[in-house]
Image (cartoon, rainbow, N blue to C red; front, side):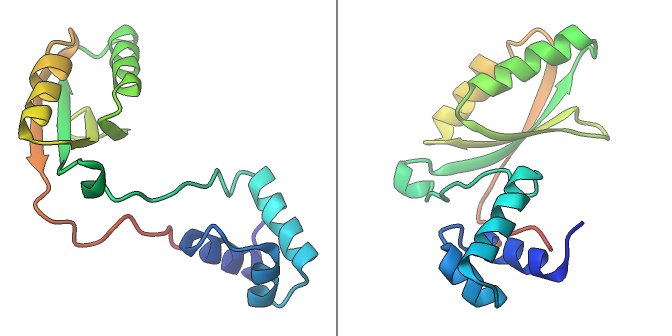
Length: 151
């Protein structure tokens, strides 16, 4: 069970995962050791799943961000497993969700350019035997970056 201090700690770490136990303690009105123990408990209980750096896609040469809806032609366990394996091997696909509604999957992709997106769609996704069709949307501008989860 989370208390108000845990919630405040999680919110602070989502904004800056580099906070030291000393800094967390000051923020939470706890000793550094108490703050460190709380963070460790939240990690061990799975509230905190890991830490990562947020990179600038355009500085890495990834100028096209898109979302791809994938519609399967058949929905057996073998097809779903095979498609999930394909998705896991492609670095351009940064997120993937199974969906309700018309599309079976929604993929978030980053590519260097439009020819790279075209290659991903026509040479990788569409040839998969379970895929019936794909529909892509290219991001023109991102109004809000991936935000912290509400706590």
